[in-house]
Length: 63
Image (cartoon, rainbow, N blue to C red):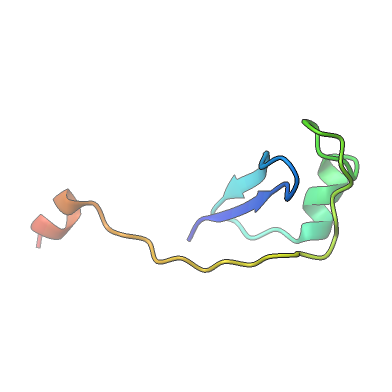
């Protein structure tokens, strides 16, 4: 499961990984500001998306 935190103003990827992190931890890591646009990072998520992950064709053929 991949998790991404993205700046809502400029789209900079603040965190991407498999290990879940809280929005507060991500904001604390960057000092509370986006390193690209210097907008404040909210500790409350504004948008949450859940998207299906497609398996590569090569994995489905291995069965």
